Image (cartoon, rainbow, N blue to C red; front, side):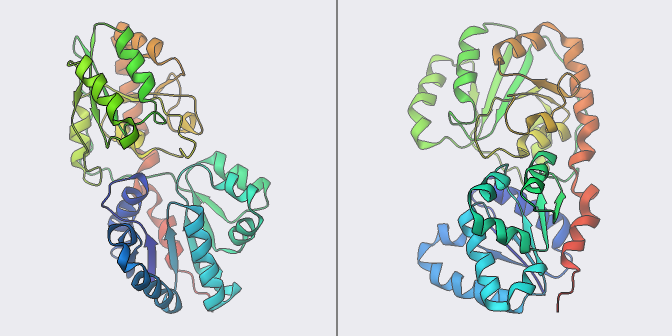
Length: 335
């Protein structure tokens, strides 16, 4: 029996969506059992039961995938496995790294650094993260981006008179919402803007005031990104806005979804966005959101080229592209 320890929907955050899609698209047909740690958040009184279940499952599992969102949880699970089954059995573990800070965390924590050196495989989202780990002497890595299924993919639509922008992420300052507010206040015509995503509580008052002052901006709530319906939803737009400055950004799932939906993206020059969106070919990488938006409003031919190239790049982020590599993680035999 193989085990996938992770956080699964709901809530719909980046970690749970990635885990859910990997399990559904790759591991569900190959004798892999789920242990959902999000149960601890949904029902805190279940924490002792979940912990005991974790111990039991680690003892009996042949291979273990760990897809959790914090270093603290990674360290606890890796430490438990070492205590329960010894150092050698850490080789049957695959760490599904989330976000873009694993190399920085390892640099700051020697215990965690040594744990990472001992596991079988670390799946990282970008070449930059892999390079950072190799500098620290961690070489047991494979680059597998934050993937999505291509089922329901949508070819680019022709651009109309008004460019249709969309924001599709958590609504907060760290993800660049302040930049979007500033852009809306400065660009007066030639576009529409729709917003999807959970509103962070501390940002709610400011965001609601923004919507009240700009009735032309439409807010659609939270959308379930674990289904292929997300592609038809996004396909009605032209450009994804993603001016993030969140420190944990790796390969944002929303940018992958934009490619499969046949739309382009304007992204900030932050963390590994340049690896995901090739500037001037698949989208625009810029920290001046106003100029980038105005450029596409003024040049519809360029916009159509970017949409087409972004769609062509979707295979870099398909679960099918990496399925064989992923299945190798549950075919190890460590005695």
